[in-house]
Image (cartoon, rainbow, N blue to C red):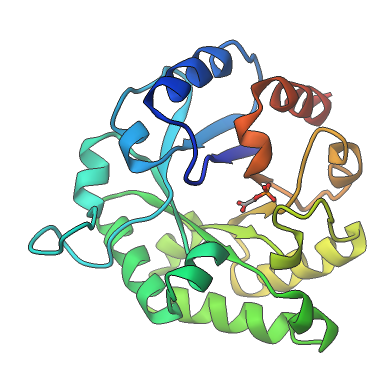
Length: 233
Ligand code: PGA
């Protein structure tokens, strides 16, 4: 299983130091991908924990104030990078076009993108789930080779589930994962959105899930430990 930890815009320098001390004590079989803020990403590398970024510039290095390029991420040992998170799509108005550019920059540096896709509550109620996912996936992958497509990781994160405590049913998740596989049969697909140590027993019954993208839970090492334990046993 892949378990990606999205710290979002949390943890000061000192808090991150303590957090890492707790995190490294967790023993598990899963592949842990830690995605801290850029500042914390640069502060240390941790044995057995893979490093991911939460965002990347759509341009190369150069005169782009405030941006962090894929080659810079690479130089700090980032192996993965989240792209197209719904929070960035909403607050930074990130478009599918820009997301596609970011994915290309990451592959150029050998960094694996974790592409977030998912529908709003309203889109689900209006039966637009497949249309939304199709648009997000096709626009992000249109310039990729088959090899790159197979390496791309998808995180299905229904927007109505992120941080709300509400998760889709296993039937709903299975239907979406099957649909995504029509476009990307070889990609690993993660589930994200309020996954926690309480609902993992239900979620893990979905055999198509290759792993999880955790937001809130990523910040609570004790609960994360319980989650991983339940997931793996
Ligand atoms: P959540 O966030 O686990 O807090 O719902 C997931 C995410 O936004 O990646």
